[in-house]
Length: 131
Image (cartoon, rainbow, N blue to C red; front, side, top):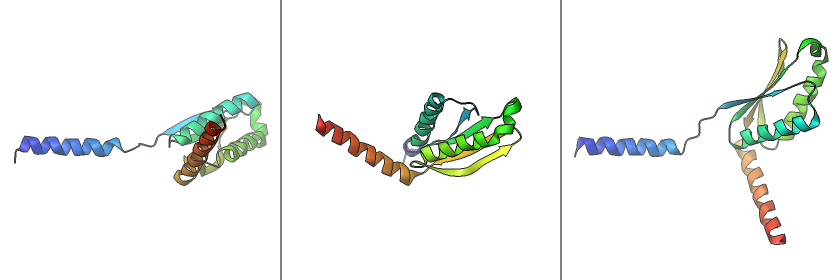
């Protein structure tokens, strides 16, 4: 057997196996204690997109100046985020205050994502039938 041909086939197999892999990256989304409803919704949709693309999300909130006295407001926003993405994500780290920054780690849950995608597919099919 030709060694060059063997090396070529081996590299092709390695390339093919890498094609099906997905490297998980950590995306960060920063929130503020004084965030408006519209801004929160916009950022939350981005968090959902990151999770649906199977990336981890680190939600962080920096308390600036006197905002540190209202840590409960930050906790409320983090809890709201957890509730809004619970259908596709799992909490890897609860909201934790370190200095003047509160962080929450969310990871994609493959089983929940599969259920969500099936549900969305049914809704699309149903809306197509209605037209």
